[in-house]
Length: 244
Ligand code: NAP
Picture 1 (cartoon, rainbow, N blue to C red):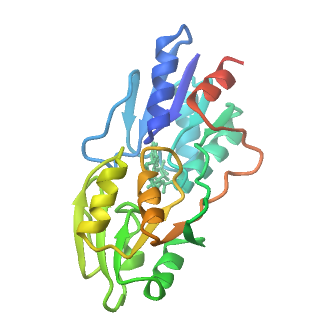
Picture 2 (picture 1 turned 60 degrees about the horizontal axis):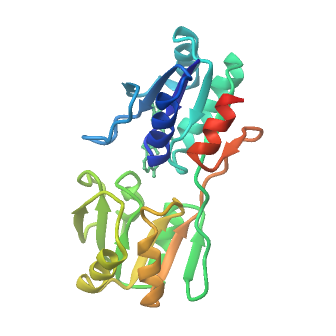
Picture 3 (picture 1 turned 120 degrees about the horizontal axis):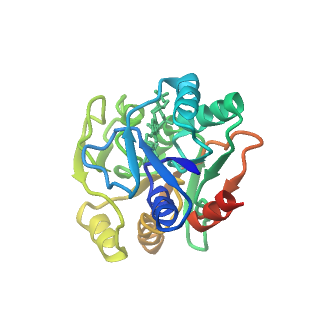
């Protein structure tokens, strides 16, 4: 069996570990190439775009791929759509590996929105000192006239323009701790947090820290998974699908 994992997440690396540890055959992980020094999984690695759904379909045929697992980030909607199209073109089975989204609990003050632009529009009514954790792609949504808003922008690699006019960059990569997140909110006098509904434990402590401090949180909802594509919530469940 030759499995192509569309990667860029901890779940993708975990699945590559599981497949390479067993008697299942080859695994190739594909990365977009956005991060300068990515954490690399075991197995084979390729980096860079395929050139749209047609390019991905050609890659699947040329490399005799038997199954594709789209384990990209829940917000990487273009590659997920491309994978669905390529699977339909080639008949190669596709699974989406997607960790569950977060759920608000008692004490949370969440403001849900469907886009980064929607998040930017909500901010002036919620606070002045913003902890922006949506990643460096999409900062343009916060680069317009944001009045007296100040941003603490956390990302793996340095933000590039267009980005908010008044900002400080904090280069870091999860997992993050609750103590660390509490300290960040305190030190920077944060009064509103912005996050995508990425799900998972690695970046969830910021939500707990915000809840403890009574801070509003703008949560950007996930794009939907394409119709008809099966979804697994964990790498173990994805391995189960592969072996079936
Ligand atoms: P995207 O908007 O869905 O995809 C844009 C283009 O990037 C795709 O059309 C594809 O190019 C290429 N691409 C994306 N993922 C790829 C992969 N795993 N292998 C090869 N090509 C890929 O993606 P994105 O939101 O920019 O995310 C890029 C990568 O960063 C993904 O692998 C994702 O898992 C990871 N990531 C994203 C986020 C996020 O918030 N979006 C957060 C953490 C990690 P072609 O059309 O040329 O094939």
